[in-house]
Image (cartoon, rainbow, N blue to C red; front, side, top):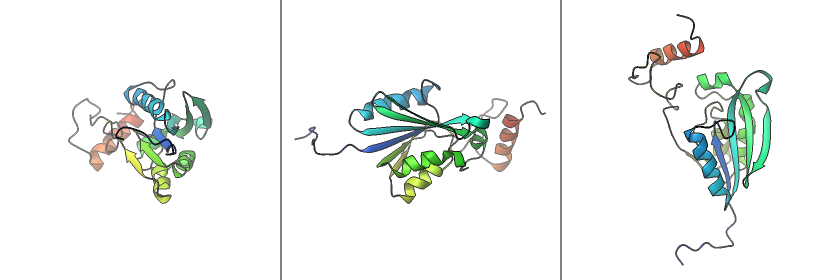
Length: 173
């Protein structure tokens, strides 16, 4: 009947991709991702793929842990990947491999990994859903605010370049 679950339905392999995850990163999206992973893990096989900013030797480092019924795979990606939308850093390839092996990929804000996981999912015919929580897809600052705090009229090559330079070199006039 309505609302009953067939016990013969196999769990779905869900990959939840996010740019930060507790306890290392705690904010609105990160807390939401943790709650979503926990809820989905009650009925499905869940892997949380985390693309966290890393520098030097930490870039490319992969850690893998189990907690609360799901797996968390953290991949260190170069901080510069945040500044170049669409960049496909080689360090994000472990996340791409996870995407190719999933039944469905749920993407929360995923700064740093570029499009590698989505390209892999698409190549394997894995459906994905992207949930946008901020302006990250069109603004590297995520806010559509200029360095002086005023509202940006929208992305343009000149405006975005000004913000990129300001944020990369804040001490240079």
